[in-house]
Image (tube, rainbow, N blue to C red):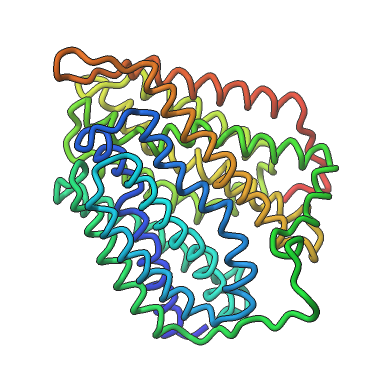
Length: 401
């Protein structure tokens, strides 16, 4: 791959995740503190992303891959999404905002897979070339969060304006990307083909099924982090909370690049165990940390994001790839994405909102959260999932990465 192409694809990844980073982590602060949404409503609103993740395989599998060039679909979706999120910014009630954000996420979520597909199409060796390009996406997310933090718009509608502008810019840029023609599939495309239902046969393998279930369950504590860490840090009085949270993405990028070193030495089971343990430690740190002498606990909990995410979710994705036969690799990845970012995150965002609501009280005009009790819940869930995994998972030496 020449330097020009690498630069173009790196720019694509940067913008793709910049758009996402402008609102995903800080939106809960805006919804709860500015619009006055109840915690369960905040959780349900974040669940729109998961609903879109469950629906998007239909779109990507049937329309983006089969009928229209990838770069044109990407451009249209981002421009349309930019318009929708701008319109949504004017909504102040739960019903209207929920509908608007759902419409937006239905446009955005498919673009993640499409941008990956466009990149893979230009690579002779994706396994070697993609990580160094994909890491620009994490950098884009970090830059977006720092802009939101420095502008002090974590509780402001202006973060949605930034999302709208950047989405439209990316949409226009998408039309300059290399042409990716639609795949002319032989025969009639069925719903079974689109959803990759043939990959369900992999669940007959007990070890694969265990990783599959653990991935869904771990999305519950993951949802607590994404949905509630920013309001938590702001309520504690941490300045530039969004900027501080971007340290988690920096950690993610670093661990993503050095993961191959650990794979050959630790194997799948130890990698996933470390990832699960990191989730437990993170929430204990959040439960007891403060902005005084124990502020280091808050920073440590944020920086653990690299271990939490990469060692569990990325390792799980690679494990799925090693277990699936060649004809089912794409379908298997689609299935695990449906289960985690779709089903798992949908349950997690709803459940986290429910738990936060249980530990929320109002005294006068002040809303008070019992954050220590809130963080205990994902701690216990992560611990139970870890015990389940350690008890039943058996890694065959021949399958070690």
